[in-house]
Image 1: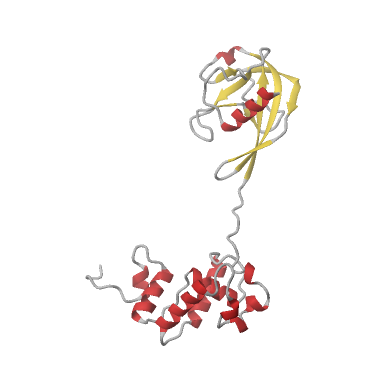
Image 2 (image 1 turned 135 degrees about the vertical axis):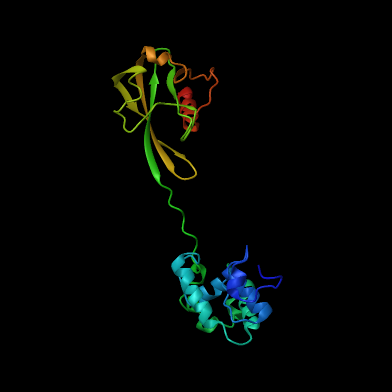
Length: 250
């Protein structure tokens, strides 16, 4: 693409695979003495503290502000010296923890130092907010003390595993109607529990009930009366295993 000649502009360098804007700037500044700002982790920390810029440096607003400052401060002459000095300053003096402010050449007008904000700048990455979903799991006992499990569809959470029948609230029993007749007066909510997936929390309200099986409950491909002693080996959803162990211990 470049005829065997190494690119000599920041834009061309940044177009190469694995080279970002800051790395392209560093290559251009250090090897070609080209006026090219950089913003690696060390430089971000120096500029953020010197200008008391709060927030996580990778946030768009903060990053854009830091790029503006980096561009403004990068000199037209001796760019390589300036670039190396900024990287070294961040790596050896303005370190992430225990910065050596007493020997820093920028200490006198460092806004973060003057405002006692060194420890909080740069800001940390914000914690990802994990959404919370809610569900009700119905734990239906028969006269023998077994609990009714339903095989879940192949797709979705707990695919093809056995779980307690699920509903939106403790008084809705849509999937259970065909398999069991519930004694509504026996409905009893247990202590809620939380199961965490990689991308959301699931808050579960277990509801126990006593029920009489119908003929549909004999469909082995969907329904299973499961003994609490675990004598039947089937694949169980993780929260179901936890609840069954708890029930077995009582």
